Amino acid sequence: MSFRSELDAADWRKLQLAPLWTFALVAGADGDVDDDEWAALSDELDEESYRANAFVGELFASVREDWDELLAAAGAAEGTPNDELEAAGDVLTGQLRDDVFKDFAESLVQLAHRVAEASETFFADGESVDEAAAVERVSVALGLT
Image 1 (cartoon, rainbow, N blue to C red):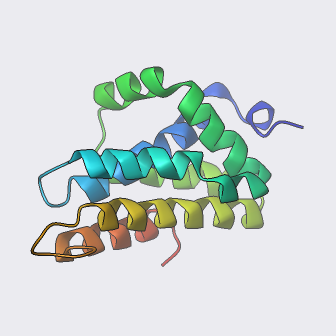
Image 2: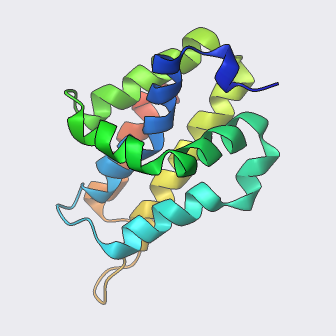
């Protein structure tokens, strides 16, 4: 069974874009999106552990598959990354089982932490204050806190 077939195309697209909105919130928090942050996003989408969860594995695989289309859609979006992430959360809470939603939302928060940690510099390790606040916004947007 495919989770994609359980949702209409617009809702599936909102969910596919959720990792990109998460990335935009966190990587853009300090005003400087760098190559290490892009690499962290790519690594997280490829992370083997996500495949243990059927929904997250299917969704993240589809993000990789539709990457160019998703980047174009994100660039054309009218809402803010936070608003768009909340819209994805609304799809999750309205149409998927609570355990599926929670696993996906937690995966996005983990992705947010990995992106924040990727932007280490000589003077700073790990998440900056702005990035930590952005990670919290991801959690709030998805209704986890």
